[in-house]
Length: 608
Image (tube, rainbow, N blue to C red):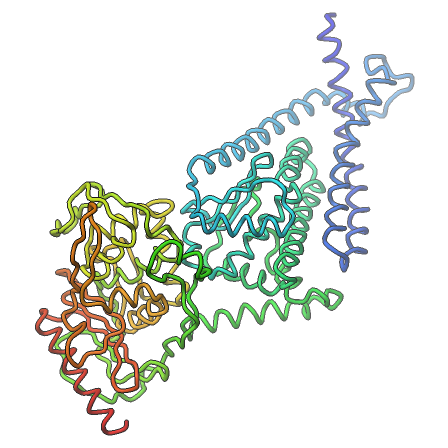
């Protein structure tokens, strides 16, 4: 018999008996772990994590020790000195088949693990760097959490949640849409959670945990312990993140809940996702960290209250603050026009459709709405809840998404062939190859409704045009809009639809961006294109006109949408939002707006 055959003949029975004995040994380890976790159910999740980790380590050590003992002290090739029971002899005869089946299972699990690692590598290759201001935010959070290693922040358009990958070169990957779909203070809470994973080397621990799962895949206790360990890992990261956020666990709870409302897609187990673990249990602990000794239904009340309140608010109101805010100094250094989100202003208050209208005007536009800001009173409405194409009014959302990403507004953009309109073949005053600062492109898009400038803004967004459209969708979700949808950044697509009521909410959100309000309320502006100053004129001829006090404006036109106009204007000491969709022509659109303004003046005189 060759030495290799001898080793194989010794190894197979030793491994087989070790695996068989682990069936009952694992049950014992699981029973002890159940008791320990029950005793520690009110303790810090760090203790539960330690129990699960130690139990998994014991599960791995037991069959290894048993196999080593058999190879070192027992002659597995020698005939037994006593007769084995018949059933045990039958089991011994099946050991080669048992080991072969185990080897096949381990091989399949190894393929699963390899696929996960390949997926992580693919994420690294596809990700794009986050804007510098967001990397700076992550660096500041890392310093607060005591993370010594350099952690990069990158963006991907199709992730459901921020995740952490790598341990030697840790990387936090964030869905691009979250830049516009979630307020900054909540997004920082999610990033703090991911940095807590980095600080604890959780990615490496998770990788080793996956190896144990692969080797002992056949035992349910291993999977149960592994699942409990992952749950505890997320709770420990929550604790560290909450401590880094000035001991404000409610902030992280709100962030996790907002993330769960946006979308819930499964993640491979190798990635450490912010929405991992048992989310309701994590919300309970964050909302009531000092009352974990209460009964289960009492513990769930704060989280359930948070969930119900959030859903009710989203269904009934518009957010009162801009989804993304940044320090004024950051944007001031980037451009002469302020782009930070201003202090919170009253949002448009929804009014029941049965609210009486004060104006009964014959307007040409097929869909119209006049809304008094502050009170939310509907002054006039005409078929205001029907979803229709909105053409270049889309560019208000385009501008918000651009500014939410906090880009360098002085960075030079180059118009490419990809920015040319191949859908409507609309004319453009900007040639392919033209260069301009991002701020100039923003002005061209908002004032002159320049489609190539809008397309370039979307194309140069982190993650590209696809990520930009996804961020637009996240933006409207964050505003609570349920009948608004976007397919491109220009408004040329007839799939860009909304209602007059929801356009008024878009205007209310855009008004909280000083850059958008300033640009769209100017009659003319000068922008540099190819190093030469070019005059830009507002497409709304009413801006700057006698008797008009327009604070924000945007026009739009396609064959499908007709002539569209939305404005935020002042009449007397009140502010109104005007939305006109699908008018028959520019003259009719202007006539409708003039008739509305004259009627508002008459109402003010009547003190209504």
